[in-house]
Length: 198
Image 1 (cartoon, rainbow, N blue to C red):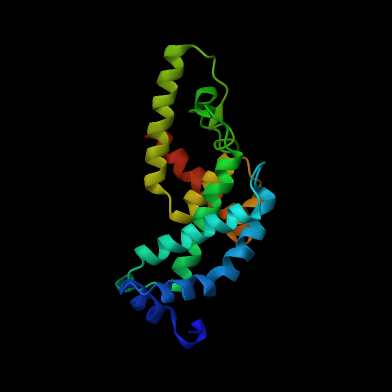
Image 2 (image 1 turned 90 degrees about the vertical axis):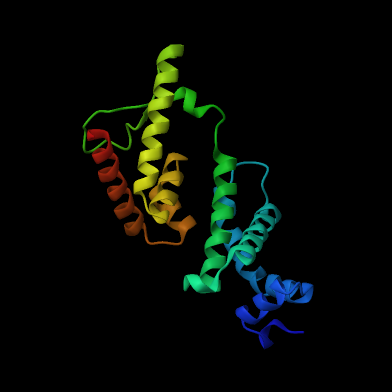
């Protein structure tokens, strides 16, 4: 069997009918995409992660796409698979850059400063235990409210920005124009400011 003889939907139908060969064909078809995306993300990983780790994570994203794809959602499988793969890769990149207990070292600033709302969103705490717990609750509530208002794209941009990525890096990771990243961050700032006013 050659994957070029079948379109994605024919392969998916066979996979859902427990055809292992079809599953292998679809994985073979999407492997070059996964490898290319993994090569793009490897510079943003901190320590201990190599290209094979990213490729494996991308494969997990493809498997999730295969399991969760629904034709009735009017989405193209290729687009959906790419999104699932990228989300898995971004998740791995973020985990390599995350710092344990970062939330205990940060708190929410409720200042109404246009230029620095996002930059001041997370600031140093005084390490007073009761204040820290209160700030953690405030931060979690604010993040929950903000996440409800953000689009999927804005959520991805916000998460990467919180991880310390620069605009250009975020644009590279999400395969978007830096201007689109800047626009998303401006929208996030406006939404954050509106939530903080309520």
